[in-house]
Structures are given as structure tokens and as C-alpha cells.
Image (cartoon, rainbow, N blue to C red; front, top):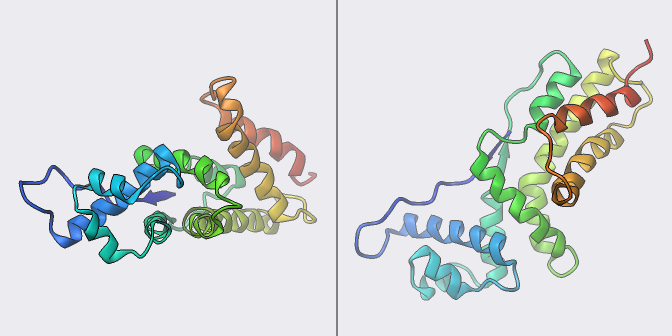
Length: 204
């Protein structure tokens, strides 16, 4: 998976940035402040200051802070090429590596707790996050499990969505909570895979 985010503009020459540069600088600044401060605490003024643009530049393009955040989040998207290593374990290892861009995934990790906190107050923001990050990944996991069932690697009565919950849920819980109690070991992904696969694998 590659979580794409347009790179922040390089150091600009004196003067106001060009329109396209300004637009992307605003979106990048929005994501950074959302991750650092949360939706309620961040402000249009703060975004403008971090992006190096005037406040009126933002208000001309977006009608509200929520509209700005939603567009910024939708700019994060999960890209997947064709994936088939020939084994379920091989496919899952690739999927659970998450991203080959650690900077982009670091941002996603910082944003996840923020969006969990907005589930009730701002469902529109959460929906944008799900569409950009969660749903593409879920569809790929589900397809991998369905293919493994067809190959006979998994029990034929297995619900693919339940399998997704088992893998993604364990990883997300560790990412959000228990990693603060103990560091995540380098082999954590393999431990999840081997533990769960023993329970859902087909009887030979």
C-alpha cells in the first residue's frame, strides 16, 4: 500500500506562492494541524500561518473549516497494485506492512485517534477518512481472504469480514492503546498472522 500525500512545497522564494503551490500548502498545513491539535482546536488562521498564505486566500476557496479538512483528508488515498504472492500469509504480510512511505503513514497514525474522537461530533470528517484510507484497504483485505478460501487455505465457512476484523482489529488496538504499555516488537505482524491463521486455517 502507498498512502499518497502531495509533498510539502520546498522553501519558497520571497513573495506569495503561486496558486497551485498555495492550494497544496494549505491542504498540507491543514492535515498537520489536524494531527497536532484536533479539529476543534485548529483554526483557519493557524492553517494560513503555517501555509504561508493570507487568511482570505483560504476563505475564497473553502466555505468553512470542515469543508477545508474534508478536502485535505480526501487528498490522502490508498493506492494498491495487483497483489498475489501465491499464499495467504504472503499477501497478508504485504498488506499489514501498511506503507512504503513512513512519513505518510506517520501522518495517518497521528490522524486516526483524532477521527475516532470526531465520530459523533463530525461524522462528515470521519466519512471522508473512511473513504480515503479505510475502505480501499478493507476491500483489498476482503479480496485476499476470499481468494484464500477459494484456494482451500481457509475454512470454507469463514466469514471474510470476520477475518478482516481479527487481523485489522488486533493491529489497530495495539497501535492505539497497548503500544503505550510496551513497545511493539519487530515481529508483531508475524505474531498476529501466525496466531490467527492457526485458528481460521483449513483443516488438512
